[in-house]
Image 1 (tube, rainbow, N blue to C red):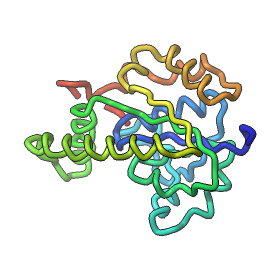
Image 2 (image 1 turned 60 degrees about the vertical axis):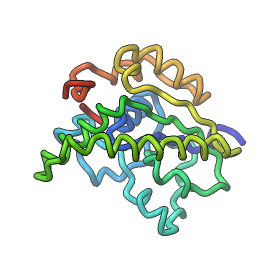
Image 3 (image 1 turned 135 degrees about the horizontal axis):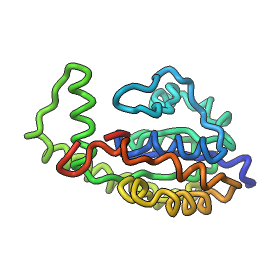
Image 4 (image 1 turned 90 degrees about the horizontal axis):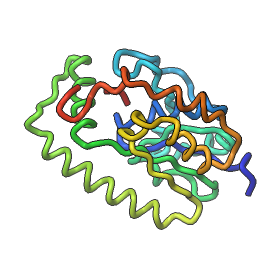
Length: 198
């Protein structure tokens, strides 16, 4: 199967850096499959890059997936298993320090008037940790998916190195310099022990 038939996926937990990676890939030259329904806001200053029909895959709406060939689409980790096995995928899976993810999620909920409880972080860290183990095991068994794991924290510190690694994984011509200019320190707000972007 050639690269024009491959579907590129950016995945991970919510608030793990998936939107920033989508922005990097778009800057590098890949066409993003989005509907722009969810606009940029204080939680994601560079935009969300979401495609609403992705959320309906668990109800069986996968007819759109063929349209994504040669493009990149964001699919959160919990929905990966609903992607049709008839397609070929290259998955960039974002990883981030768990306490930063939880802090970022809590900050986002606060902005929406639904304050989270820091005391529950341990419970959610355990739930997310078990979810990620299950997803990674599942991914390892998929013959139609190649996966590259990218650490959000490293991406912000060494954007050019990570951009080059991502471009080599994708195997298509990419503007690595433009990709490397996307991750910026001002968007890295929810650091361990501090305050981020997804």
